[in-house]
Length: 343
Image (cartoon, rainbow, N blue to C red; front, side, top):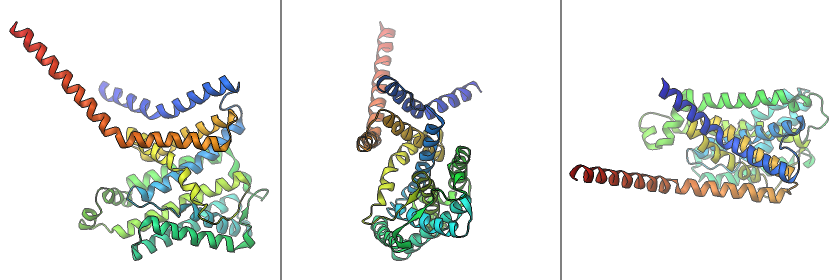
C-alpha cells in the first residue's frame, strides 16, 4: 500500500508539474518586469477559462482523428459553419445561449458527418480532403447572411456563455464526456484498437469505417463548441476565405501535443489536454501582462511547441543513453565487487 501511495503521489506531481512550472515562470517574470501577477482580477480568471475551454475543445477535436492517422485540416471551417449557421438559427428562434451551443454543436456534427462520409467513400488523403472541404465550407459561410457571419454581442441570453461558473462546468463536462467516449464506451474500445492496427481491427470484426465517421462527428461537435465561446469573447464571427480558418487548427496543435505528453503520465489523455490548455494559456496571459505583442506571443508559443516536438522526436535516444549509462555503472560495480572478493 505504501508503494502504491508513493507511486500515486509521484504521478500527481508529474501531472501537475507542467501547469505549475508555467505559472511559476510567468508569475516571476510578470512580477519582475511588470510589477503585477499573472492573475490580478476576476477578469483575468474569466479570460483564462474562456481561452481554456476553446483550446481544450479544439485540441481534443484535432486528436480525435490525428491519433488514427487522419489530419483533418477542415476543423477550422467546420467551426465557422457550425457557429454561423447554428448561432443565427438559435437567435432567430430566441433559444438563448444554451440554444446557440446546442444548434452550433448539431450543425458542427453534421459538418463532421459530411467530411467523414466523403472520406470513407472517396478515400481521398485526409489532409487533401481537409483542404478541399475547408474551401467549400468557407465559401458557404461567405455566401450566406450577406457576409455578416453571426453577431452575439448584446443578444439576449448570451450573458450565460460569459458566466465563469458556466464556463467551468462546461470545461469539466467536455473532459468527462470525451473521457467516457474514448476510454469507457464501445466506440472508444474500437477506437483504441484501430489506433494499434487498422488491419487487425478490421480482421477482428470492428467496423473501422463507422468508427472513422463517428470520430469526424465528435470533432465537428467539439470545434463548434469551441467556436461559440470564441465568438462570445470577440462579440461576433465574420466569415473568412483563403483557408484562413486553418489558423485555429495550427494554433491548437501545441495544447494537443503537450496534452498527449501529460496524459501519458496520468494515463488520461483528456485530463492531460485540459492541463496542457491551462499551461499554454497561462503562458499567453503572462506574456500579455508583460506587454508583448501578439506576433511576439506567437513566436514564443510556437518556439516552445517546436522544442516539445524536437524532444518527442528524440526522447527514445535520451532513454537509450540513460539505459546505457545505467548498464555501464552496473558493470563497473560488479567488476569492483568481483575484484574486492578476489583480493
